[in-house]
Length: 358
Image (cartoon, rainbow, N blue to C red; front, side, top):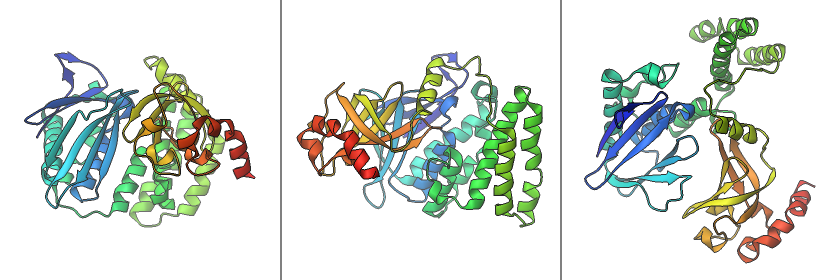
């Protein structure tokens, strides 16, 4: 298997995009990676899990509304099944599937991206922040034995520990995660002329590195003072980026109206072997097979058809990544009711939710 990274496709350069071309003897596919949903920190975690045999390992590369899912599963002691599935597209077949040794898969990706960074990468064409040079990709080629929890902690720090994998973070790590977020906020405030608020954030963290270096980091004090600083600054009102995508803003606004535990209506937009993608009014949510009913289900087509009405409970959200998980099983008055009469489950949904709250 061969992997290639490039910032141009068909001779055209497009700012904010990097393309990954993956080839086997039988097939090749191209993955579009967008700086809007920067996948590279998470790609680093995914490769690290493969290197350290924490399998299966999965990740989604979002192409601003669609994308692919990278899946690696062990089939024996020496080989993995590596698969690229479409994500939020009306396709049933994998885009690519191959058997490969774990070390070969990691080295194929890592050697290619390090070669790309060393010889072809143009940071201004990717982002105003130089993301790829700030990740130690060559470290993945060093044999390791990192605990599963460490990779989950890294993923939470990269991808938004407030909503995903937060249970793996210590109090100290949550404070550092907030520091990372506040650093970006401080830069945005400066760019938009809110210098006083930017300095409030920046000056608070001036001693953080020193406290960590001399091992005198008082997490309780930082947590309290962090909260005070945020109260002093108040809610941020940054002007929208003039080059931003209106549809993206609409999806983000819609996500911010949702919350875990909310009863929501939608329409089926995609039926896959593992679950259903539901349009919930401007953004997509995932209803996995295991969350359709308390009784086991082999094929979601037993219950749903394309464009059918769905009523479900939101069970998990990651607003930063634009991901939502749903459950209809939690609306069943009795286990298996979704397999018998979904409409009856939907009609009694408010009462079911109300009774569970009480």
